[in-house]
Image (cartoon, rainbow, N blue to C red; front, side, top):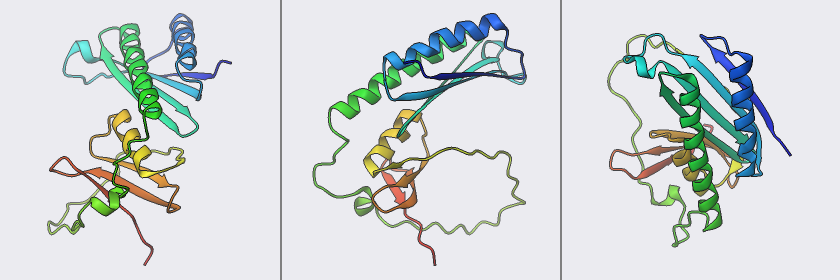
Length: 191
């Protein structure tokens, strides 16, 4: 069963030849992981890239039930950027499958990430200049436990934070990396 593949171009036109090449290769991703429902490939031309070899950008996002993986690569040629991103995606899928097969990231002592993370002070004494929202993103979230959220955070390459819906507490939580390399969990409460 093939999944849905969407190919988009930003600041560039996607020719039929490129579209067919990318669709043909991206459709084969579900051979590696049956849970894939949709693959989104975004091709773009970065006009203001520092180097000419970084101007063509290919980003692949794979979605499925309780699954979200993303890979991005840059090159001087759009097809080579896509091929590099596809290789990176295949490695992420293999890593994802391996982590799911060999335990769910259990800590071993039965404590949650919230129990072991020390309390933090989120107050900021500095006065901020006028804040401007430069970009808005919308994405679907699926219920997951803390260990799955940590796994997704690592697989997506998010270094600072990851927002997820905690299926155990039925609330939106934020998992973040602390300066010392450990992780913290923000569990908002309505006052």
